[in-house]
Length: 176
Image 1 (cartoon, rainbow, N blue to C red):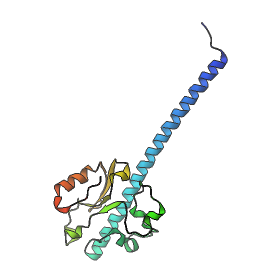
Image 2 (cartoon, rainbow, N blue to C red):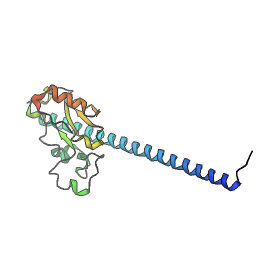
Image 3 (spheres, helix red, strand yellow):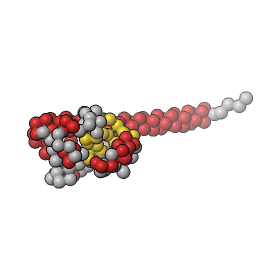
Image 4 (cartoon, one colour):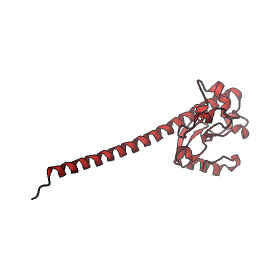
C-alpha cells in the first residue's frame, strides 16, 4: 500500500475545504437572495394593505372612491414622507422616480366609482389595487388588495387574469 506524501494530502485537504467553503457561500447567497425577495414581496403587500385601508376610509367619508391614490397621501395615510408607498419595494427606483407624483407608482388602482355609485355595492372579492407589472416580482406573480381588505399573492397573475376574463365589462388591465 502506497502512501501519498504528506504535502499532497494537505493539498487535497485544502482543495476540499476550499470547495466546501465555496459551496456553503453559494448556498448562503442563494438563501439570502430568496429571503430578500420574499421580504420585499411582503412589504409590497403591506403597502397595498395600507392603501386599501385608506381607500376604504375615504369611501366611507366621501361616499365614493378617490379618483387617484395620490389623493390619499396628505389626509388618509399618516406619516408619509414621500410617495414611496406607491412604489413596489421589489422594483429598484431612484429618488427622482417619485419626486413629482405625476406617474403615481407601480400599482394599478381600480376606481370602482366608474361602475358603482355606492361603494357598499362593490362586491367584496373584487380587486382594488395590484402590482402594475409581473416584472415587479421577477415575473413570478403579483400582489393584489381586494375591496374586502384581503391582500394576497397571485402566482403568475392567474387570479386577476381569470377575473378580467369573467368580467370584460370592467376593462381591468392585466399585468404582463
